[in-house]
Image (cartoon, rainbow, N blue to C red; front, side):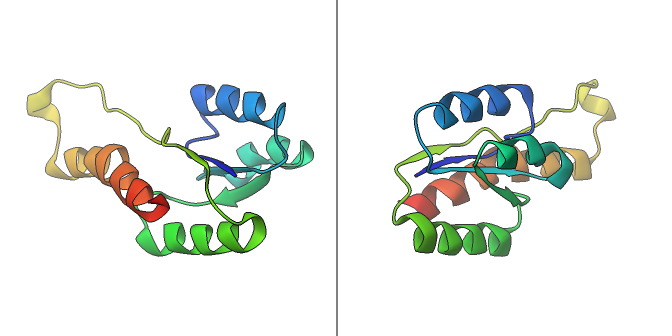
Length: 113
């Protein structure tokens, strides 16, 4: 099974569409149910999740393993940036970026392994 996080962004969409062309075992993740709907129409399993929420990630993998067996490929694509001068960023902004871009990817990778 293929799992693609950040599937509602440009890169995630392209990766998901490419994988859907070669496999029926594709699970896409994103924070917007509406933006995930085109994948559902193409037979992907869509999962609304925030990669910073460990309980959501755990639930995702439990459901995925029950449905498909194992995760063969994880595409850690969820992420975002805040493009301001460093001195203008709040601690909350910095933590939010790190929680998604770093810790989200680490937790997902650990879960797959």
